[in-house]
Length: 135
Image (cartoon, rainbow, N blue to C red; front, top):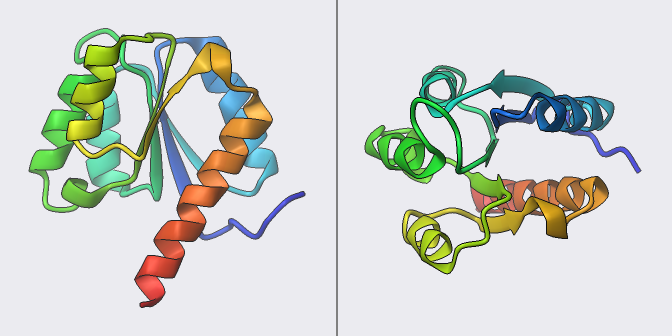
């Protein structure tokens, strides 16, 4: 089911080209505006420039990893409250705790989630964001 998401944008920050393409293709079909970054440095720059509605962030990446990108993002006035979903292959309780402490929506381990589940989770988080903006 495609929802009206023409006014929503997603930044996908992942160094795996297959993950990028898979997510980009699926979210394009959902009507999202998509931004892609291959490392944390590029992701941070695009996030601050484009202000996407939600960021799908991998942890293990070149240049700046996901945790460092998240730390730097939270230093930016807009980035303090930016919506971030961690989407990674790393299943490490310390990293989960660190990410949660930095204000991520959720920590999703890629191998545990199907693409449809990720799309549903993004829609859920955006609906929550939209309802909070209306208050």
